[in-house]
Structure formats: structure tokens, C-alpha cells
Length: 398
Image (cartoon, rainbow, N blue to C red; front, side, top):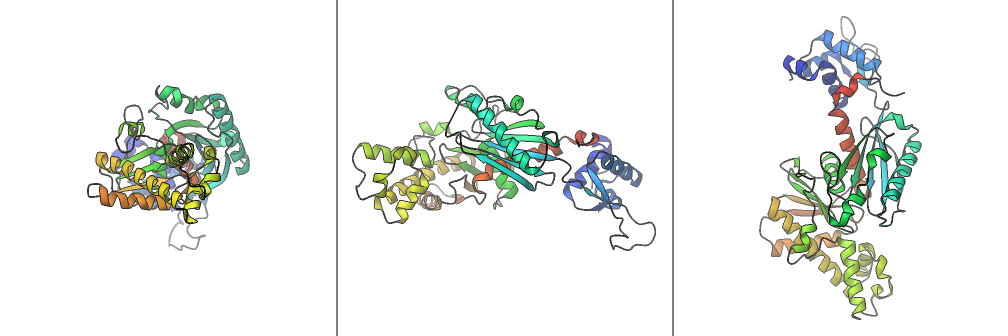
């Protein structure tokens, strides 16, 4: 129970608003028991929140069928569709947006794959704006109804939403100024995409662990790292940045599963060692990905299976690096390729158990699919909203 000192510290409206977020229909008595506030204070706060559109008053307890002697209790609930948040995933090849209400229920989605690796900042900004416009239109809302938009980018992001100079300015191109471009969609917050994937795993995924790494493993490896329940950021937001793998013997590169498979088959093709009977011999190696590789392997192609095994060992080595540094209990491979890459992940687990030091973490595929970053962005946007309780003192946009 939170006592009266908390009332002075955080304010009664903030306490009542937090209760509304965490519960369904509630009465003043229930808020009093949870917060230690007086009845008069709770009722006054409820009136103010209702007047500003954050909560709505329901039928009283007697009308709702909960008979009690005396004066019937007033009942309230969060006005979950009074305002919205947006989670935006701006990756190397695609942009996806999710619109959610105040309960976190997804009400609309939009996506485009038009970027195709495009690094031009102006195009990335314009595409992001277009995708948000489509998503909010599908939700039937206007920009002023969005209170917070969280953007996930493939770059380190510091506490001010900035990415450091480095990597030949790649990070700057990935994070070129979303706050200005998207200013009509509420407060704009920025976060690294792998960190948001880790937030999504904690919020929506199947993990029960408090120390885990979440790997985005498509074109480049990036990790969201949670140790003892805390998401790691670092001074410049670079915790989990895996360019250091370029210097790790046995790994040698931070390229992800798609990029590594494409590179290896292309090298073998130039060397003339791809078997003519392999389905991979007729594919355009510039567009090869793990799904095509696994399809060939499943069809019984021994060359494709050898590449799958090689990818699994490489993934296992990456997992071993994270385990050595951070002692995580679980590593989740997330993103669009995660489910179909199960054979690669299984091989990585086998390699770790036979070649790395015990105890080894479990390695598994995320169940959240392609929207893992956007789902984490929605969760972060809601957390941002709830961490700023002073917002509740102002009327919601109508």
C-alpha cells in the first residue's frame, strides 16, 4: 500500500490514474485501499480525470448488479479509446506502424517494404510519415489523438534520442531527425530496434527469465540485453551493438543470417564450387535469404544443409559471446526470419552444448514475428505516457 507521503510526492491524480491503467472497472473504495488516499481526495481526482476525458463514470455498483446497503458506490474505468500511441519500426528494408489504445490493444497497422536497404535520410523520413498516416487513417483517428510515438531504428540511441557519429555515418542515416518529421503525432521518442524487441519479449513474449539477450539476426546482428530485469543502454545507447563481432575470432563479422548466407553462397558461386544439382545454383545470390536456403535444405540438398549447419555454428558462437559477457539465461532470436530459422537455431543450441562452457543458455525463436520491434515500441510509448503523470492534468484532445 502506498501511504499519504506518496500522495504528497506524486499527487493524488497521478495515483488514481495509475490505478485506472492497471485495473478494469473500479470504485473509490478500491483506490483508497490501493493508495491510502482519502475518499474525498479520490472522488475529487476521479471527477477531474473524468472531466479531462481520461476516465469515464459507469453505472453505480447497485445498477451493475452488485447490491450493497447504503449509498451505491460510483464506478469508473479508463477511457481506453480516448487517446492512442504509435509504435514505429523503421528498419533497413521496411517500415511498419502499429496504433494502440491506452490499454495497448492494437487497433490498426500499416507497412511498406519500399526502402529495400535505402539509406537516404529524406526518403526514410518521408516513408515513415506516410506509413503513420496510413496506420492512423485505418484506425479512424487524427494526429492530435496520438499522445506518444516511439520509433525503433537500427542504431544506438542515447537518452536524448540521438545516435552517435560512427560506422561511416550509417547510424546518422538510420536516425536522421524523426522528432521534427513526425511532430504532429504526439511526443516522439527514439530507441534502438533490438532494445525494443527485448521490451516486446518481456511484455508479450514467452520468456520467464530476468536475464536474456534478444537477437535481431536478419541483415546484421543486433542485441537487446536485459540483465536482472534491467534493459541495458550504456552511455551512448550502444549496449548490444555487435560490430565488435568483426574482431572476434571464429565469428569475424556482425552480418546477420541473411547476409552471411548470401555472402557464403556468392563466394562459392564465384569459386565454382556450388553443386550444379543444388537449387541454390540457379538462384540470384544477390537476393538469397534464409527462407530460400532452408527450402533447399528441406528438399534434401546437402549443399544447402551444409550452409545451414555453418550458419547454426556461427549463431552459436555469437550466443556464446553474449553468454560469456553477461551470463544470460536465454537468447531469443527475433524478427521476420525467427520462426522459419528454427533449424539454424537448433543447430546453434547443439553447437553451444558441445563446444562452449557450461552453463549454456537456451536459444529459441521469438513467437512475435515481424512486428516484434513495433510491439516493443508500443509498449515503450505507453510506458512513456505513464511515466509522465502530469499529462493527466490536461484534457485529452477531441
